[in-house]
Image (cartoon, rainbow, N blue to C red; front, side):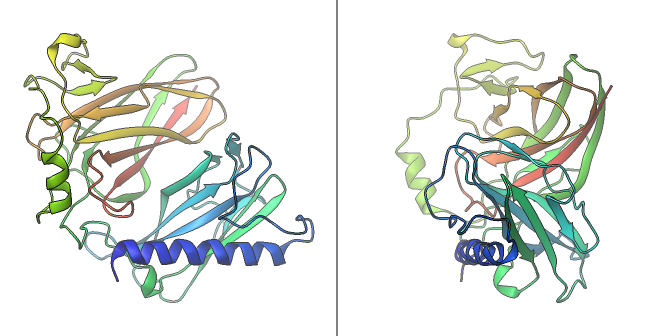
Length: 326
């Protein structure tokens, strides 16, 4: 069974299990909660936790449990603080789960680090959105195992990311915080990271054929750093103009708010990167975040392969950045 097949089985089993557990769990819930596969509503719908799977970290010293969710609201971003309506047990309620839930299916949103000898122990995440409780349990059953660091089908590996230049890179899902920043209300806080997308170790003929059928990208100046809305930016952040050429990005860095007491505006929220022909070269991605209220925030940075070489559960890299705003 491939990692894609295992992931599909895991998500399907999780969705069904969540519905059954939720329906039986609360007398306050409606007579029948909608199933995960039923059409979404605009607002007022439930949010289902989703157990994506688990895997060993690079050296096998610990296990990462990767979790996402499905917000059945097409137009409602839901915020649920840590507490009775958003808790993971035992040992919780806080395991780093989000308190901000974007509409739709959000895959592999956060990771929980547990000991390598976690064994047959379990964790349970309970979410109550719009008065509708949903529950899912995480475990280390073999059918849910994922290799975060190489796709068995094509040898693809996750992007490499560094939050400080010239420091070791990270790859795959990350638990905890990769960096802590400080700022003040209304003043942009720089968000900087460096990323690269290693090429697959084995030939993926489907991708090769697809690439052959695409127009060749125009040349990229050697000092090019990022492509934003089709415009090239050099290492000083200056736009080079529409006539300077564009290139197909190797990957895209995406910033989202995971927690925090106020509105956050990240510009740009998506930073496409091209590695000037060398996919092993680290390329800088720069953005700024502006915060509307004081407090502690968590922003999630994910490096997404633009070519779609992974299957959604391998290969990706994400990490959280904590920002303390005065």
